[in-house]
Image (cartoon, rainbow, N blue to C red; front, side, top):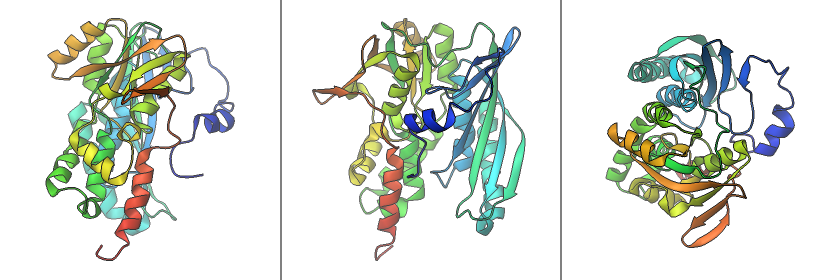
Length: 337
């Protein structure tokens, strides 16, 4: 298998049939399109999610905490804390432990959450360190949001922009190669996108207004997240791809690497399916977060319109970040780098 998360068919074959028993106090079980579980605790629920950071080098601790907290918040739950697992490459273990924890601490302080514990070890066979984060959040029993709640007639809104996380990772980790293709100023601005990957505030604000479902766009990008949102609910989405915001810096880097920004890992972009789009847009505008309509939930299959051409909406086979990393890794081996 190539690097990247397992495909829906692989998950259905290898993972989902082997989940132990279905407990009655688990309100949201593991399934395609669900990034968090919901556990019944009486008048409150606990929401839990876990994620690794494997494609990023710099800022990995920061990204790991932010992304795990996002998965909790899109279920309408306020993040409480995280557990960290640090698997440290032997050659860089001391420096990585310090840097990962400094970055994770900075993210946790920004979010107002606690690092609750976890595990750390130096792991033989790794050529780079890996961080895995499990996030915990809480919500009222009648206030949490399901990932599979989108219904025909809902408007699909998007906050943020496509490819923010991937753009920041590429500019941070491969700037010395990308400077062949884009300006130093573009790379500087692109690196700053790592500060925009949180959707915790917008997700909680949107949930207060009335949403059917929310999903943050991580691996697979905005198109992958749209396919997951539709698949989880058993509905279709008519998507206007030309309405999906893409920053100039993302266009420049993706154009240089011949990758699709809509398939690039996009933490910082939040999908919201809602029957009251105007109320959600107004609430997000009030907190300084923009949201634009990009589609409509329908009963039939999903379609994507781009540049006047309509086709089927399908999840990418893998995130464009992995294609970019492979190309840039090869380019870095060429004379002059």
